[in-house]
Length: 186
Image (cartoon, rainbow, N blue to C red; front, top):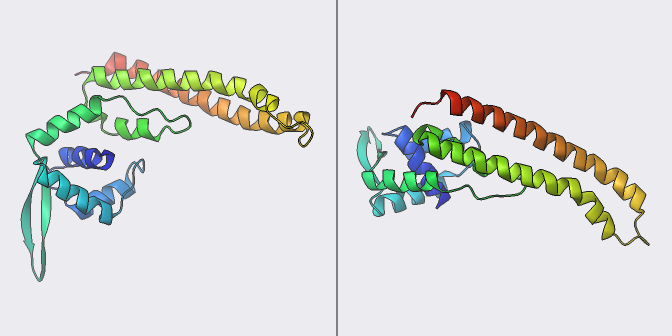
């Protein structure tokens, strides 16, 4: 379903796009979701069968006609519904949030800020979990086979990079959110 919603979003932002162009856009732009033509064309067929997109055949000399897709009102409604849904929280993966935000020009200000607030809360919660993580992991070690001091030293490096990345990401998100709250007009 996510691929279909991404396709709806891309078609909404670029009416008259072909399946091949959708593949190129996905490959060359965000990179948050990649799909091959063997996935894109069946998804486009499903969207068409459900009345969410239409297409027009454009003849090409000595080749099969290319299909140029446009989104229908029903497709727009489903897209708006998907865009409003909270992002699936994945502990270490920011890509679902970034994928959804790639379609933020199609969202209203309240939806954008709500997505950002949830992502900030998710990262803050995860950050607290990571800070506690090393002590918990050391408690579970088989101390007859693994030196806890050595494990703590090694794991603390992993922990620091994760915490630093989270702090940086949180700072960026909070800055961006403040900017949007101040400057974005519906």
